[in-house]
Length: 219
Image 1 (cartoon, rainbow, N blue to C red):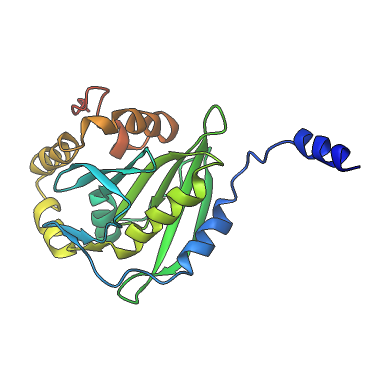
Image 2 (cartoon, one colour):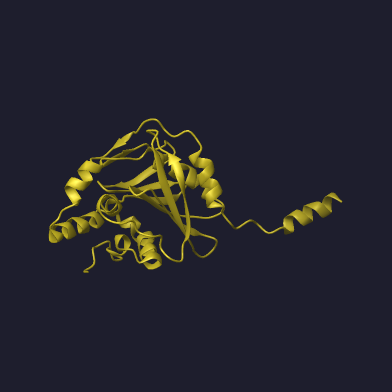
């Protein structure tokens, strides 16, 4: 009987799905960090000791979490858009999850997450709150750990909105375009593969402005 149970359990299929909504609800109900330990001109955030930082610019960071690269980008386009323009709708073809959470300062914000299925049970995810965007690839084996670490950073993120609007919200379109290109020139080269995927999957200008070499393309 025991041998039968062992054989039966070995024949059961592995769970290859990730319930992102349940994971996010769990992580956003945990206590957020109360301080920041990395400060930039446009933003600050708390980085857990278990997370490595591979690349850093004034608007972008590449982290290493359990051997997986995670991109954190200051979402300048959305910051400007939320101040002056209508909100974009989620990209078609993606699985879209949204909800409310409390950040490190006790403020209630909205998060959105889009997920795009890839090969071999991998999923490309984009987590955003209109100020910062996280991009990474997860699978059923690492999704819980990766998302937990990402949410910790995500909830601690604080934006210097006045500085962003002052430096990037420029009425002269030619000057604004140059600033927009500068943002993407700062994206570390390691980001290119995930950025290219997001361009293909979403068609969004904030990902398609860079080509495979990391340089801005002509509009």
